[in-house]
Length: 241
Image (cartoon, rainbow, N blue to C red):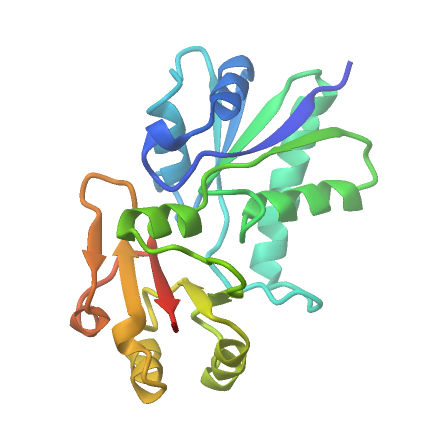
């Protein structure tokens, strides 16, 4: 009997924010296929999962996924595509042996998750397999809660924007919404804050760094974060109202 492939959201960082269902699946699966951003590097997703469920007796397969931009509708970078294909082959081998495989992913699998790319690659191979996606607490919701700033109220419109977008595209999206959440802000803070200043929105922004972790930091004045080394796990919420 073929195994099941689970893509499980483990939340933004604090293991206590993992869902009961995610923990149950991690507990029952013998194989954990964990993503890593660096060769021989650690896995944040694994750290979170292991904070709630023991790794004892588990087969931990760590796989590097290059941190390069993916543009939907365009061919991915060859290194990225190769990483997806290698991951799919390893996972398929386990599934064919009847072993269940769980892929823990940061936050929620539906939001910029490598897990869905792996699912698509599995489908490209034409091999039938069982898959279950388990939602998790997103960095978007967790950052809103940490800063005590609502994402949307009443008839407000919310948009999620990768901060790596060019300025003109960001301007267009800000014109369409009442609240904006910026992700992937760590490398573009000077440009992003400069644009918000230009639009009169810098005072409407709050930055949450390493949300839900012990060293979480909330920047109520985002200007102060411009010259700092901001961690990759950082999210900015801008309420225009």
